[in-house]
Length: 331
Image (cartoon, rainbow, N blue to C red; front, side, top):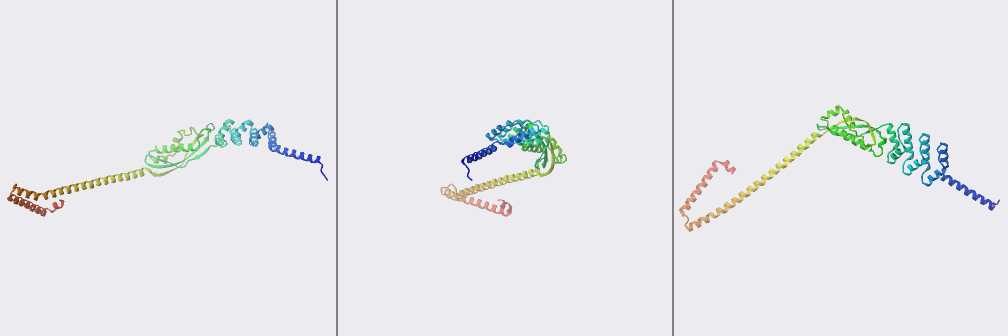
């Protein structure tokens, strides 16, 4: 059986129509449009086509819009589409609006979108406003006036402050401020036993400082979960100071000893120099005597008298050394 040319043309046209229809269905989300109309959300097919042309995924906008409509929240397609194009999470924003409405929290779409675009989890923030979160700090060490180290661990109960989520500091700032308050409170205690006996004084003092100002949270309570004793910092410092003083004293003593040795060496050098001069002078005495004898300045008898005096002096020195040996050793 042969197919005529007219039949082939009809089959070709049918194929083209089917391909065009399939392409139209893939480009125009008819199923999504039917779901929106069935849910009572007024949205046109041309609006969905426009989203395709603007490279917006219609499902990411229409499904949250249906969810908001069912929850009784009035939103416009342009609002959700603009937030999607800005890089926001439309579905999470709508979930946060629904949660805020159920919790009777006054939260507008603009505020919610701003929080989401700021990089914060807006749904978690709304949930934290209803159900406060507990932040546990690590052990914070402080030193009391008596020099004993005290370690304390705190649990901070916070609630999200919706008005300060944009631009407010995060959990790290809360932990840092509480840690600073704990350290200063321990440091102002005269004895470490006061902290152990009444740890509530730390939480009361820290809580009264208004540490949540400028943050995205509101501190509800600060509870000291654990207190422990650390090192005796005062004794360690005193020991180190004593060792340092000893080293300084030893260095000064060594310096004085070196100066004494140097002075002694200098004195010895001077004595040797004086002895050399004496020897030199004594070596000139015989020549002087000879010259005096030749010139007639002294006589022979005078010379012998001088020798007798010198011999008598040497004898007296020898007798003195024999009778006083201790003096000889001293010399």
